[in-house]
Length: 240
Image 1 (spheres, one colour):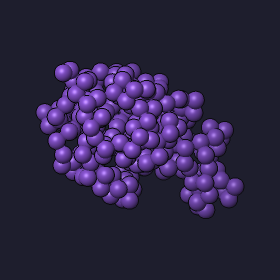
Image 2 (image 1 turned 180 degrees about the vertical axis):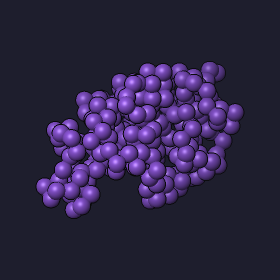
Image 3 (image 1 turned 120 degrees about the vertical axis):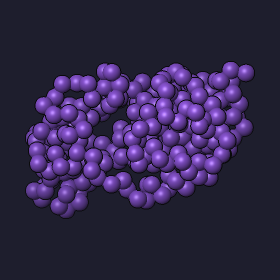
């Protein structure tokens, strides 16, 4: 059997699958990957993206932060690809229990996934730092400079910046799903960003699948490694 046939068989046989994904899941929806050759890290800006997307920079230079954020982080017209649709289908069939994602674009929910744990937050949610009023993505897109609430407070995106801690409830829930999973599929992530990448250490099963275009530090630990475009691979396996 080929790797792809094994993947399909494992999915068919499993009723407790968890998916853990990163930026590579969204690149097929034309959202650039931070670390790929044409990703955000390789585009010219006044400061490196790691600096701009830090809590310190956000506090010190909010106008420059929001200029970068609007230009490089918001993709309101992006649509789910076959990977997102495959995961939503598997959840609807009762096979997939949760999606744990490092992405902030909301495409899993747009495809129909219900149980989505967003480790790094979401660009679709924004709150006033002062009164906590909620704002959608349109409020950020329509604003100039630093977006302000009606009360005068700054509207901050609900995304986890460098130097900020992850939400503890989301972490605990992710660990719970991964630890109890029969099958763990990891896709579109370099597995180099911690603490998120450390979550897979909680997996106890023997169906650890890695789907990626490049090698990862975890390849040797995986029970099945498939190299290629994740939308095509998951789409074929799930029949979407």
